[in-house]
Amino acid sequence: MRFGCSVTLELLDAAAAVGCSFVELSTAVLLPERADGDTVDVLNRLCRASAPAEVWDLSLPEGSAVCGPSVEWPKITRHVYTVLRRASAVGGSVVGISCGNAFSVPRGFSHREALGQISDFFMMCGAVARKHGMVVGIEPRCFDRSVPIRSLPQAMEIARGVNSPGVGVLPNLSHIKTAGQSILDIADAAAWLAHVHVSESDLADRSDGSDLTPELWHALRLADYQGRVGIRGKWTGGAEDMAQALQALQSYLSPL
Image (cartoon, rainbow, N blue to C red; front, top):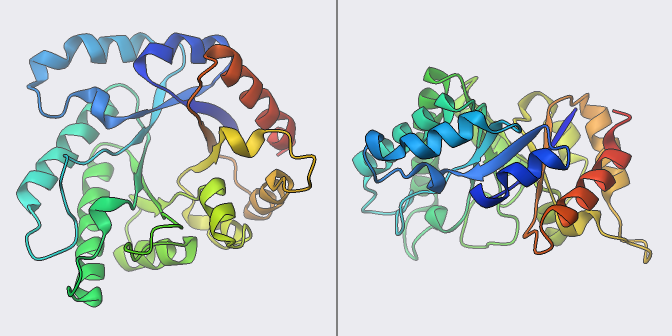
């Protein structure tokens, strides 16, 4: 199992220095609205990084909607193709797609039709990902009632429906914990796990007994998961915060 942190470009070198075996970035740093010639410096910097940029968080264009009566499919498809092509060029392997505001179902719109649009979106993303040697991870937003993918089983249902090797699921320990859902859903999703997220706060001292990382260890062990685990954090303390979180995660999960 390999461990890394979600970072900005400014923390790229710091992540490598504290021992991250990979980093995770937002696709926004790939300048999707700019021509290829404008991205040379950024791509070169990412290619030279000691901690490779293997995991990416898809950021859709501002105001984009996957669900509803006026989805701009050409714009969304063009955006996905551009960012995945660039991410692949710098060593990207996984693109996580958080089911946030863009997946909200407008009031009065058919829930069934919205689920069909979401499936179409992930089918498109999976096809583009496979073309570039990547895999998509569907990350449910467990606390957003306007979004129809709020649990790992619901993400699994979409992934099964798409039925593509380019589409899997991406559990987030913090979201699962906030929603009071079962961490063992991770074990049930074993064959579909594209990546795993924990947050910096998940790794803080939990002397009150609220620490769920042992349960995560158990679920990943049941799943026989040997992939990547990424830590999401604000890193207000810079490299020191990253180092502490990484050390805590390694102490819990390295035996796997």
